[in-house]
Structures are given as structure tokens and as C-alpha cells.
Length: 491
Image 1 (cartoon, rainbow, N blue to C red):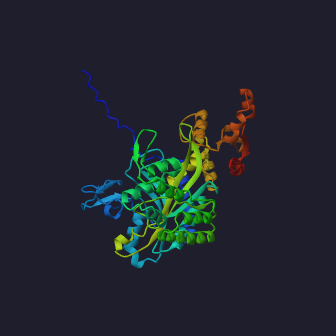
Image 2: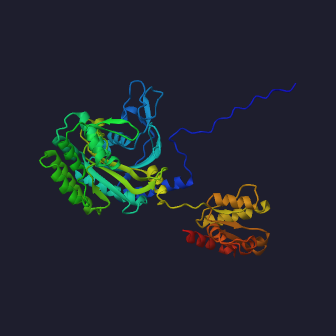
């Protein structure tokens, strides 16, 4: 009697939503961006630190333990000492903890940069991940507009260094003092109304003036039929808020004049205007142009988190979505003054300001808009004869010693499959050494980019075999120089 065979259990290959896999092109793009951005930070005198992936949950500030499990917004687990620890939500809370622990022996103000992955236990969606890379800079222990101005100007430099062309990005700046002045002027006294007004202003770029006016009034029904209750303002107060929202002009100076007119008579707004005027003078001295840094009264960030100036970096490029509609890439980072974060650890006033660039989002956005450099793979040395494998590896080593990425094909397939492999690897060229080349002391090099371009114009197989488009035979001494010429021409 034949034995019954128990079918083997096979695991299902799948990954959790919001945790992207990254291949060479994305990894290298992010690493290059981080390198260029942190070069800017170091140039401006900031020092790097690295903190662990986990923090005590109560140190994250924004996400304190909620009853038995602190799982709102963070990924948390209970350590062996029965305390809850959480994967860091951002790089700022770990900075606050580090600064508070080491405050007495740090040079003050403490200026640091950091980069690395962060994790958010939120619903993922297009362009929204639960694990992503950030690159931050912060100054702890410096009050006043000078530290904020430095952050704003440096953020513009960092975005440009990451690869965003001038004119295709902007850093938008506002201050919570102006917002408070506006809300006081229209007598929006209860917290719920104030919050509804600020959220409405934050939607101006998406809903336009009419949509914001509806949210400031009775409310608005969107395309899906969902209804959002409004702030309940009367017509006069709605007009005041909209005049404030439209105060942004072509230059920072003109915007300040328009804001002054829109918020006349407010003491707290006057403080905010003085703050922005000081920032304008400082960032102008730091080289920030009017088209790179603008004052925008509709910038709303972290309604309970930020205490002063707020700023947001934005890509201005537009792409077509799946329905053919133009969509602006939008925010790729932001920051502001957050004077309460470090203070809660120390019980004393410790001012702080900083910003974060979303490296993963910036890399994805620049890839969509065609601003990311296309990476080429390694030069591939074909393996036509296993008996001469050492010779092939010697050629690869010669190229690597000259700083050229190179590999030897390690499979067991024939030449056609090896050429297909090189194409899938994005190889700029392949090196071929057969019996004829070995006898003559030469190598055959095929430029895969030029070869593909020239092959399109050839209709006849005989002509293709005779011309061998993009292919050249050179002495072994000329291998490195010829490959470099190919790489330079492709670049």
C-alpha cells in the first residue's frame, strides 16, 4: 500500500501594508539625498547624533500611553520590565529626550542633525507609508527669530542640495502669533471654533476660496456626499479670514504690508509681524530669495505642537494622476518652533526650533517628476567558458580597481540569456571574451545603450550581424579607458 503524502505547508509571501521594499535605484537615491542634505547641515555647523529606534512610550509626548496599550499612532510593545516602549514616531522626540538627559554637559545652544527611519501606526495610502526616512536639523536652547531664520534658510538650501531645481520648490513660512491675532480679531473664543477655522485655512490650496468660505460658514458637502460642519462665522468675519488668507504676495515685503492691513489693531498680530520682519531681514542676509522662501498666512502645522514660526517645504511640480488630473506633489517636509517639548523633561524653559525633510517622500516625488538621476547597473563580464572563469574575474577586478562597478555573470545560461540578464540589471556595457579574443589578447565591449539605439534603425538580421551596433574590440590594456568613455558618453 502506497504511503499517503502529506502536502508540505508553504508560507504565503506577503508584507504588511505601508512597509515598502526598496531596490538599488531607490536605496541609492535616498542615500545620495541624505549625504547631500547632511553636507549642508555640517556646513552650517550642526553635529550629527543617532538615537535608537525605540523610546519609552511616555517620552514621545504626542502619543502618551492610552490606558493599557499606547498604540494610538505608534508601534508599541511591553519590555521585560513591563514598561511600554515604542518605535520612534519622528526624530524630534528622541532629540528632546537626549537633550534633557545630557543638558548640563552639552554646548548650548545644542545644534544637531539626524537621519533614519521612523514608524507611524497609521492607515497607509498613496504616498503615505508606515515606515519612511527623515532627515532633521534642530537647535535647542536658542530663543528669538535668528534661530528660526537659520532653519528656514538652511531648509531651502537642503531641498536644493537634495536635487530640487530652483523655481520648482518653495519654503512657506507663517507664525502662530498671526493666527492667534486673526482668531482674536474675529472673536473666535472657544477652542472648537478656532480649530475648525485653522483646519479650513489649511485646505485653501485644495478647496479654493469658495470651499474655505463654506467651511468657515455653515459647512460643506464634498463630492462623495460627506458633510463637514463649518465654524459658523457670519459674513463679515468670513471676509476678514479670507482677506487674511489672500495676503500672500509676490515678495515677502509686500506680503507683510498686506498682512498688516488685514490684521490692523491686533497687538498679538503686531508681534507676529515684527517676528516675520526680523526673519525676513535675516534670511535675506543668508541668501534666501523671494521665490525660494515666501510668507504664507495659510500655513498651519501642529496646532498644539508649535509655539511660534512654522514653515513647510513644498515641491511645485505637477503630475497626472490615474484619472488624468493635474496633481501638485506638495509638502516634502516642515518644521517650526516648539518651545515646550524639551521643557517638559526638565521643568524649565528650553526653547527649540527645527525642521524635517521627508527623504522617502522627496525621492518618490522626484522620481515621478523626472528629476531623479537614472542609475546604471554594473558592467557585466559574460561567462562564456567556465574553464577560464579566473580570467573573467581578473577582468572584473581590473575594472573595480579603477573605480568602475563590475560583476561576472554567475549563472549557467548561454550568451543570449546572459545579455538579457545584463539588460535587466541596467548594465551600461558588457565585456565578452571568447576564444578569438583570448588568442589575440583583446576583449569585445558592447555599449548596451548605443547598441540599442542603433539597432532600432536596422531592419535586416544580416546587416545587424555584420555591423554589431555599439560593439568594439580593443586590447586588454584599453579596457578601462574604453569603459570610462562609454560611461561618460551615457552620462
